[in-house]
Amino acid sequence: MIVAKRIQGVVFPIALLFAFLGFASFVQSDVAPSADSLRDQKRPNIVLILADDLGYTDLGSFGGEISTPTLDSLAAEGIRFTNYHTAANCAPARAMLLTGVSSHRAGVANIIEMIPPEQRDHPAYQGELGNNVVTVSTLLESAGYNTYMAGKWHLGHTKDKLPSRRGFQRTVALADSGADNWEQKPYLPIYETANWFADGERIALPEDFYSSRFLVDKMIEFIQSDQPQNGSRQSPFFAYLPFQAVHIPVQAPQEFIDRYEGRYLEGWAKLREERHKRAIKLGIVLPGVPAVTMHTTRDWNALSDEDKRFEAKRMAVYAAMVEAMDFHIARLVQYLRETGEFDNTIFIFTSDNGSEPSGPDALNTTRARFQLARQDYTADYETLGLKGSFVNLGPSFASASASPLAYYKFYAGEGGLRVPLIIAGKPLAAQPDINRAFTYVKDIAPTILSLAGVEQPGGRYAGKPVEPITGKDLTPLLKGETANVYGEDEAVGYELAGQGVLFLGSYKLVMTRGPVGDDKWRLFDIANDPGETQDLSSQQAQRFQHMLNLYQRYKRENGVLDPPQGYNHIRQVALNTVYDRFRGEALAVLMLIVLLVGFRAYAKK
Image (cartoon, rainbow, N blue to C red; front, side):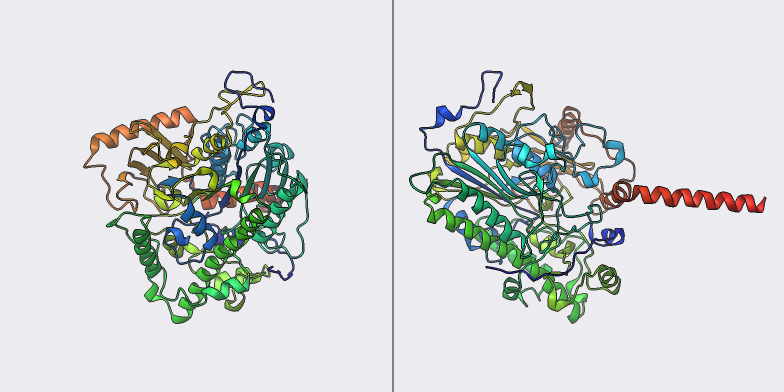
């Protein structure tokens, strides 16, 4: 058992933000079966595990060097999806994951922290899960499942928006976009505190808190609470386990960090190349798939030996946090084995988006250290990743984490959207395989319902109209009955803060905004060029124009708004922080300035 040490809490000022954020009854015929109608059927338990900001090749089974034996074992026994896509940041991905509905139609076009005031009155830009969608947990609960959640929610802060009101019977939930992993404190000044809730009520975290251990402890506790002392379980369970790992601040126990000390001294370019080769060897990407070096990647050889050592330690902490997550997942797996539930459990593992580039690529600077020290945070090499230190991955190692893909979180390149997906478990009766079919985050909810034998709600639920599920059921892929669930003419659109994406067959239309992108539309064959190295927009002009037209249709049908002129997601979070947290103080300062100006004018007169 990993034991944390205490330090005093800290609240970040707005200056640190700029430094570190880059950032029932059914009314119609298609109804879910009742618990009574399914009571005699042996329905599987379903465990949905969500990593936070995990890169495409972070897992060993996807080409990474990080030790992830638990997830790799599930991958070896199940199906690895190598062409699975999600959103480019967390709340939209979580909304689609839990509902099977487009993020805009679910009210979560963007995370609430990044939404400009001009969009806040629009129903697609509420930043929290709308009442017009039904969660998979609600549908499973209605069908007789016990439903549990332990982890990050980020789909609403008010009591009526917490997971305890969205179909989860037992919950412990972080309502925010992230928080410290060692203690109850916020990682951004936009929050006054780290907002943790249990079954809808605010809670204080234990003194020995470490996020990955705590969340698995709570999940085991929830499952155990419904485990009969004698005889078999009467109801199956749905367990949703969204980790904080590896969201910033990146933090891990020392014993895990020690395992990667010195591992990354050859730098990010070498790591990206190594992962690319292993991914080819494992069959995750096809032989000959090209990759380019991101223009945001620094020259490793230009760093001093001291800086190389420091940067390598940051990646070591990141790897340690991934391994610690895997270690605690193993504890849950072992518990299910010991209680006889493992053989009747289906595991689904994925990430909400790609690797996190936020924060300065050079953390080991006088300016960064000064800002950290003012808040009782350190960037000392010896304690990096422990309580009191703030670690981020940075764009250069984030690019290696996403190898061989381009870009990362917040951006529309494959590195921000394409992440690992593993579906495994004996109830599937599936042959271990690697599946290259295009799949999307909206597909998870209908797949879970199908595996549980629960019908989709259609257009009405509990007497109210709701958004119908538009994701695809992946069970035909799991059973080997089909090669694809999306037809060649079925388009899938996505938008984030003005960045546009449209998938059609093996092609991807994409526009990536600055400051990393250049606001130009491009066309890629992502089946053969997932690194997005060859723009086909000129060679295939007709296809390019057709997909542009389809994207415009997607915008109209989903209420997509263009961001205001000059929008920048980093600056917008800072502005929202001032508006939401400090508007009272800001108004007082503004009034004081007006009075002073008026007084000076009067004095001169």
